[in-house]
Length: 139
Image 1 (spheres, helix red, strand yellow):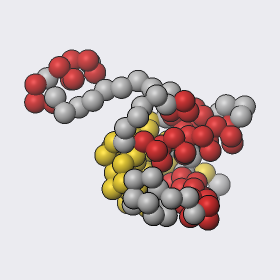
Image 2 (cartoon, helix red, strand yellow):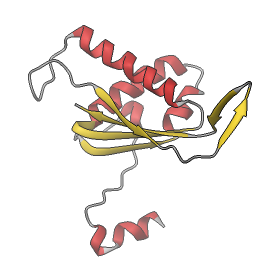
Image 3 (tube, one colour):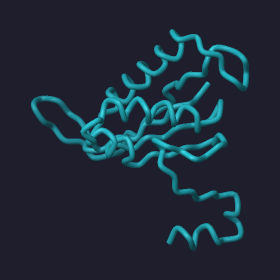
Image 4 (cartoon, rainbow, N blue to C red):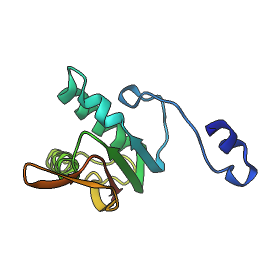
């Protein structure tokens, strides 16, 4: 189905790519990057903590300033994803690396919103969802 969607004339702006986010060969930035399960799979790897750091660095380099990152996860809660982004933001800010494009302090991801319509469950007195989708904007 994906190949048929890309062939539709009015969707010529859709770019389909397959890449290894941990060893990306892509040399451009995108306005929209969507992750549906990649961070989940990386988190299950025996070297998960190291691979997650690699993931966030790679995603930071793939999302254009002003662009949006949407993560859909069934292994992380919204709050856990927000904490990971906060950790990345603190790291980027504290290192004071210069962004090569702007020559200023590196851009960080800011929380935009999350999907609220997924079915919820109650476990241990806490209500939650089996899946979450969270959107962040790179400033």
